[in-house]
Image (cartoon, rainbow, N blue to C red; front, side, top):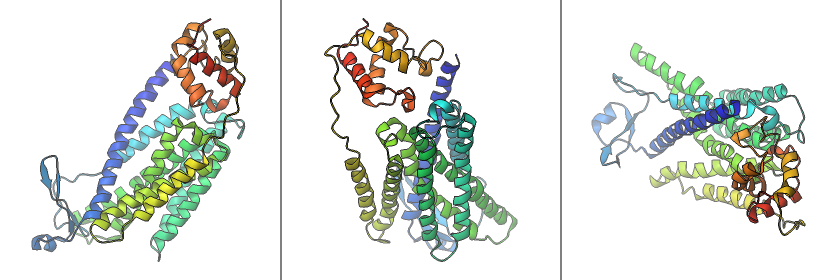
Length: 398
């Protein structure tokens, strides 16, 4: 029953997480586009009101005319929409999903004894420390160097070094699949913390000053803008890290940390292309194609590098019966998919059950090589080949 309820919790939390993440990323991408696409106002009244940019757009059968005030509007409206629950809901649902998917069973999902053998409590503490320490170090870099000369370049360089080191450290401590996801959770935590600790408090200070009739300090807008821009470059790397658990050829590689860094670099470079493309269309900067090219080259280099070597033929009988794979199942699979523990609500302790899940077994064990998790039970290539021949022979139950 516990496994069944955990599966439902996993499904519903994953669904919620995707929904709110779409809302957060969508609004973030829109405002980055908006800032990059604003042009000086033409109307004299808008100029007098302090409008620094405007945009005319058409969508869904209607025309829209958003404007941006340089520091503050002459008068606050009665209703002011705030963008923060999208961020908070994404982090809360993501952390809950991480809790029930990885921290709930650290021995299975978080720990790979071939990489580092430690206690479940130690692995959990280290994983949580990644989330906290990255934020503290990243935030210190931004606060220390963000407002200095060439500050953004310095911040960018140091954050890149920090991410690279974290990627290497995570893959030396945790199972590859967990390390990749942990990197995504780590950066996503910094993104949400940017909203919670800097962007929203700064906006609340500005609104309070306006209501009190005080002069608005533009530093709050500059800081909020800085962290918002960082968040947009973090987005594609985080999305790759979250999706990578479906593609074992990335996180099971001997040099998986290099793959992780390469994919994150490609995502950030491609995002830079889209950000600068809006400015190019208005004549503000050169065509940003070199960024897209750099991202594509990084992807192509990874594709070529990860090309699988020719598989050495494994001697397998022309036909494989259930009796031949049953000992392998008993040794490699039943401990997680038997009567005592029915992981993912799948049992493999009878011929009928194995037949029922034959397609899934073939996909997970032979094609994607995701199972056993982290190959904890030490299944061999010859045994995977047995499963393949059994499935291709019609998955017999005798």
